[in-house]
Image (cartoon, rainbow, N blue to C red; front, side):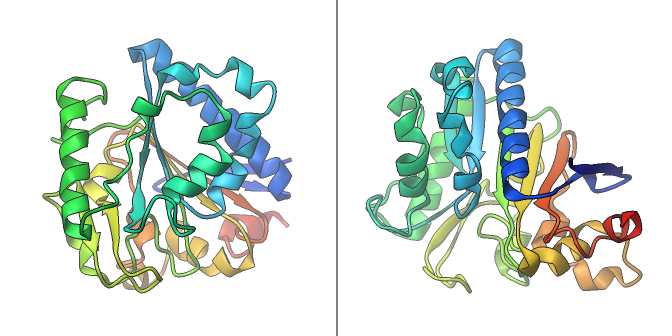
Length: 268
């Protein structure tokens, strides 16, 4: 049974007993937002990340989800991508295709991935242009209070350093405000060349989920969520900067990742 509460500023927190429970809850949530989005505006625009998040979504390829989800209405994007060939093991696209997208009936033309034959800068520019075109044609909803897209759901993993997407602590990409997509050639985590959504886009989404598992994430989760006596410590912690301006924020974690949260410690 998950321990669930809502923080006054940091959204809803769900601490799960184990990865199986987390996976079931996450997939139920994705299916629920998919259904609601399609009912509201005829499409579900979902943004994926890499890492263990994709394996936690694996139950979507199994009954009942593979039968009840309206895959034909899904449009798939990535919050960040490594600038490598789509066949490369470092590719977030390849990870999602091999473990999720190839096993369900999402239309290939609805899968919006980067051009893997150009530089990181060009890939970021092209990806932003493609998304702008989809906002212009209203495939992707526009935000009510900014010029950004309003994705139905952005799914983010979180590193032990508190990074989300390819937005790393103390990196200049944290400060990018005018672009929807930016690029890195010096990622502190290999491979060095990446593209990433910026915070204005992430924080314009209707729903944002941050997923964290394992004891190595516990301190970053504490700094990202809890009320801190020294707020400056978290100023450049990217996960702390996830704060949808007009949307919902939910944190999914196992109890190892949540072990340093004030509320979790209090509840034990």
